[in-house]
Length: 212
Image (cartoon, rainbow, N blue to C red; front, side):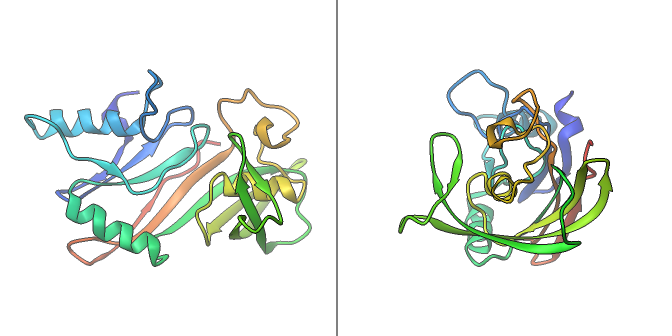
């Protein structure tokens, strides 16, 4: 896949890209391919930039997850977008296939999570953080359910941990009790982003269909 295939939108202040499942969002010190460095190279080449390119992910999605990621191209844009994150002004919607048939057509999930060893754990610890999401069932596919999800909070591995906690893990997510999977990709996709442009102040929306 060429880097240009990943770019969904770019202007002087922001860049929105589609991360393939299996890529990191940001570098982690290993040689694993990551979206941020790929997009820096794309900006450098496309705009013939000399020297270092400023590009910083406003949020991250897990390595086995695909979909939309928002980047800031300037420090001013990053600061303003971070303010939106803190004010819950950036709305993120996901599509997932989960194991089993959910009992309700839509619902809210609420758990308290702590950060364990490369996983999120439902806990009653005083240090646990509230995790909330809302889901809608799109369709039942055999013994799986396709759902659309709106995150209300942005906790580590939140969607994966919360659906596993109700015994409906994301398809392929063996880290969270899925019945099968390769550990590299799961059927969870960042499908839509809604936010206010940090400079133009216009409402922005981007959609990206799931690859499953």
